[in-house]
Length: 498
Image (cartoon, rainbow, N blue to C red):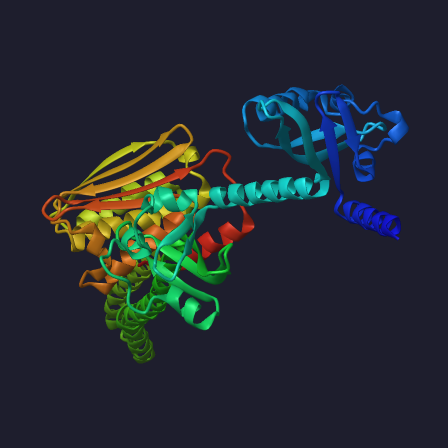
């Protein structure tokens, strides 16, 4: 019965070792006799009859790169009085590589000489590979967090920072020994209505925008509940810099507002121009035509009465009236679009425009510096240049009160440059949209819009008491005459003079 119990106990032990992949061994150091349990043989993948049961035979199954490690660990345990506990690799007969953990104790004789070593060996291959995979995954996650183009940190309920990535450290400094409000806000006390603490209180994520108080950068903040490795609550905060996006949105909104304002003023200006043309037609040509009609009726009556002398005098009076009507028509036509631009080109038009301005404003003198040929100016830009130049000269004469204007049109390589500089009273260019005259605001904006719509660049510099300089430039290399652009330019050229 005792023997039966012993065999049953040994069977249970063997089954337990098989399940745990844990075997035991006993090494008689004096006789170099090594005894393995059945599970050790299974771990090493060999049969008892295939093993010599010596320490050297055991080392033959250890991975070649780990043999010195194992041998040194055994020597340290036998003669250095240290515990034998080691992980190492073994090679199975079929070439498979496994990882085992060994642990053993030393038995000494009365003279403290080691005579026996007993221990266990456990196959830890799967758990070791799982640890390695977890370590690799953690490394990949850490690398990902380090390379993120935004800050990430973990905040504890006591405001301490448990982790932060490279972006956080570069933007706000190292957080060691500091609270989050000291690092992020450079404050001495926690922020009121802390959004991160709402996550602690509600367990719900939070999303909000934060304006960093020192560098004036805007961040989109995402706060999420998180648990530390010990289960304690944390908040994971991710911050993405959206400063440029916000600036672009603000610029777009400002542009849309400016566009709506410009469109409104353009419509108003067009209506005013229509009204002006209507008044000129009514008060000028209309009145002249009415007078001519009256004279013609008078001549007809006198012809019926046979008064030839009176008829001759009346016809003589009609000639200046007709000439006046022709002159009025010419002036209105020139204001809308000068025929000289189509007949003789932009260079002749510039000369004509300068003479017209000087004749209207006798106190102003215009100096021309035209260093370009007619063929160097693309047809699509001729009307644009005329409108910009007319507006600039008009501003110099009416608003700047200048007595000298220097006009330059030249080509340098593939670029065309137009410059109009006066010695007038000037203004603050940054405040141009706030000038008292809405017409002047619209004029400056229309010059900019015309230039940019035609593919050019526009700038205006001015200083009070130092005059104003208007510059427009275009790249005319490989001039493309796209239909859409041509239609827009044609529309602008047909618009009323602004």
